[in-house]
Amino acid sequence: ETGVTQTPRHLVMGMTNKKSLKCEQHLGHNAMYWYKQSAKKPLELMFVYNFKEQTENNSVPSRFSPECPNSSHLFLHLHTLQPEDSALYLCASSQDPGSSYNEQFFGPGTRLTVL
Amino acid sequence: GQNIDQPTEMTATEGAIVQINCTYQTSGFNGLFWYQQHAGEAPTFLSYNVLDGLEEKGRFSSFLSRSKGYSYLLLKELQMKDSASYLCAATDSNYQLIWGAGTKLIIKP
Image (tube, rainbow over all chains, first blue to last red; front, side, top):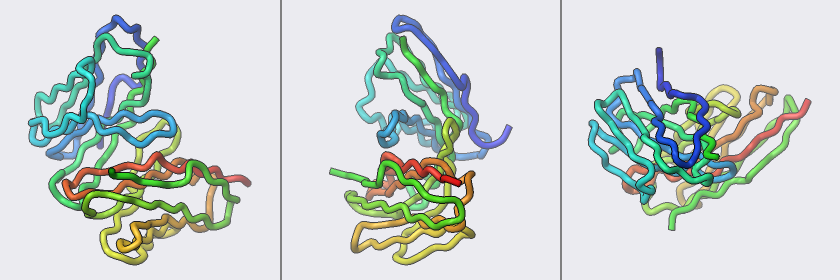
């Protein structure tokens, strides 16, 4: 595997379900990100982890819970979601989040549908 | 507040040239990125500008004017595979990326 991988690619869940999204980066980067992408809206940064420590949490509802066990893996645990949470969830990684040249490498995303 | 503006959708003809504009307002500025995103796929890096001027990379070029808070992406010799969304993102004083909503580019034969 190369780059940034995400599983599953598609997920349909009911509002009472609990599920998890997984992201893995094979680039040796230090930082990992979760973004939400909705149609015709800017990417919304949800969480940032730098060296496994959470550095950003942009007012995300508690029904989204991130976990970063090491610098290569990132999870997003989902529970009691709402239909408006349906979106594409993108994971990204970068080498140096504290520099101006902070190129982020993205995974293919998980298309989430909440019924 | 911080804001990135870019057109929602543009249409161009195969073989032609298209310019996608982006204006930004951020607290501080540390460079501007352009990404390409095909439908259902990951965004991929196209270019980065931090100094004023034009950066050319094959058929794609990116321009930045820091004084005007303005950038554009220029695509030449358009091909059908260039049909995609193009995302503009500016880096603020905290090195966070502030994203635009993306410009969907439709290429017609």
